[in-house]
Length: 408
Image (cartoon, rainbow, N blue to C red; front, top):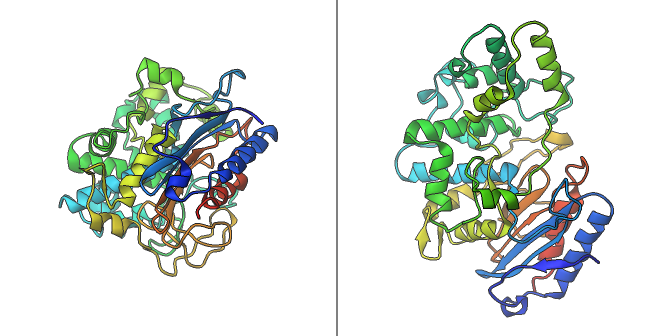
């Protein structure tokens, strides 16, 4: 089996009543997934009863250098786990009296004041029940409405016609396809909705959502390895495990169609335009160690190490079931009553062995944080896929079951 590099812990697993022999099972499971070419490597941290009992890394730490090894302090893109930080930020603004969950989005963003969007409130956006079109791949339509393609097309047309891309209303561009379903009738995972929530944070605070999250959650908790793009120092950037993001074929086809004649945008100009959009759907970078701090803060009802980030009632609201008889058909699901809190997944069923009331979130199929209040355990792990592999239940659900099997 490959070497497992171990990071610092607070105590031995047995001191909190955890069976350390199950960690060997976890290591063998990761090793097997690496051998099979499913994942590139793995990093994990387990905190039980307030103490870190396990922190390890195995396998590769680079998509381009076969000799580079995964390290326990290697920052990694959190993808959609970012959304939980946005939800905490929104709830902090709620408890500070700045906004309320039932307020219509149209009070803050003009396009939402018009039909068919005028019934959407902040809660709908947080719970993926706005009715906006979901992420690509959620449903099998041949030509699903894609928010990002809409924004990109308007950007290309503006450049082609010699206009100023900074004047584009990117929210209006993104949602111009309307609603897929009536608001509040179906759970459909919409990352673009969380980009819009980032803009809401900007409008009501006067600062960027990234700055708000860092200053109100990350820094107070001492999460020293947690960033947004552009915040990485040179030394942090060296450690950062960059994903292999490739612009999809549909975007290239769109560019070929729109720019058959006309000015071709410079790559730097294109990047600058999209950097304007909040990175609140999936832009954060962190380590599993830092995520364990974040998770313990939530287990502590908003406080960790004597630092208050958010209040108990706000956390209780976020981690209680919000949806009742709201179906979910995303990615082939057929759930008549989707388990979801505010920003957190709260499903329960056959795949998982965690307790009722557990709240969690995955990130693009290659990372997860699971928080079980009954067992007082927080587990976070990164399983970056290998050579184009993506979502794999064995890297997520199986890992959760192995970790929870150590609870005595």
